[in-house]
Image 1 (cartoon, rainbow, N blue to C red):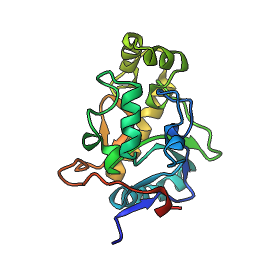
Image 2 (image 1 turned 90 degrees about the horizontal axis):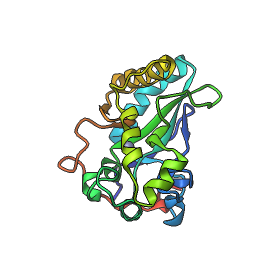
Image 3 (image 1 turned 45 degrees about the horizontal axis):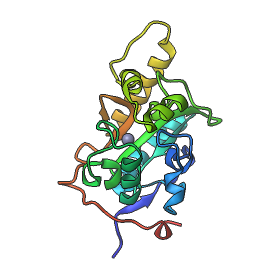
Image 4 (image 1 turned 90 degrees about the vertical axis):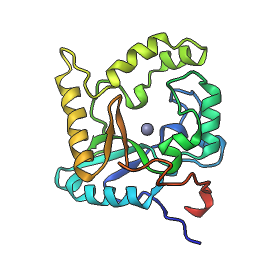
Length: 207
Ligand SMILES: [Zn+2]
C-alpha cells in the first residue's frame, strides 16, 4: 500500500528541522535520537500547497525554510516528557497536526538562504529560556510567547513585523491556515484527526 505522504522537495525549500538539531526548546536533537534525522515529510495535500507556492517564491527570489513537518509520535512523546507543562506540546499525538503530517513550521529566507528577522525566532526559541523551561520555570517564556502572536506589535520592529506579515500573506495565499499564537506555524485548514489519521511513518520509506 502506498501511503499519501511525501518528502518535501524543490529548489525553493531549505530543509533544516529544528528537532534534528539540539538548539531548540527541548535542548536535544530528538529526531536524531529516534533515527528520523533531518527528514521533512508531509501529507501530499500539504505538498500540493507547497507546489502552488514554489513559483511565487521563485519569482520573488525567496526560499522557504522548513523547520518542522511530520513529527513521529515517538518524538512527540519524548518532547512531551522533556517539557511536560501545559501550553508547549499537544496533550497527545492525535491532537498535534505535526504528527498527522498536516502542519509546517516555516520562515522565509533570501535567495542565499539567509533567514529574515521576525519578532521571535521560530518556536520562539531562546537558549537561556530553554534552560529555564527545562528546569521547570516557564513564566518568562510564557511572557516571551506574546511576541509570537500574529497580532503582536511593538515600536522599533517594523521590519520584523513586515516579514511576519509577508510570510503569512504567502502561506495563506497558497491555501494554508495560520495559527494566531505562532507566526511560524501553518497547517491544512481541515488538517485535524477527523480528516487525517495518525500514521507511524518510517524514515527508510523516504530515503
Ligand atoms: Zn508547528
